[in-house]
Image (cartoon, rainbow, N blue to C red):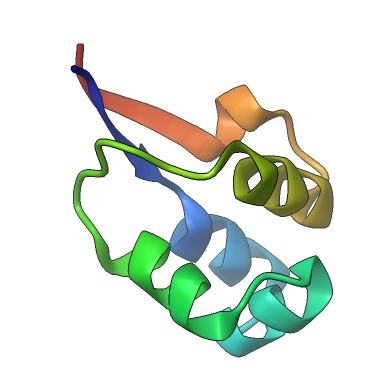
Length: 70
């Protein structure tokens, strides 16, 4: 199983947003956004959350996800 890292913190910093603002703008619960942003590697992630985050940052899902290990 592969591992990924979500570039939430980097994208939020580019926009000048806090993780709380990302949660509010995306409609994703803050604790989930914070958890995804803090984890160095994730084995499973909710695709709906990925889609919402990508739309919030106005990027492709591929730009949000960094593959750590395949």
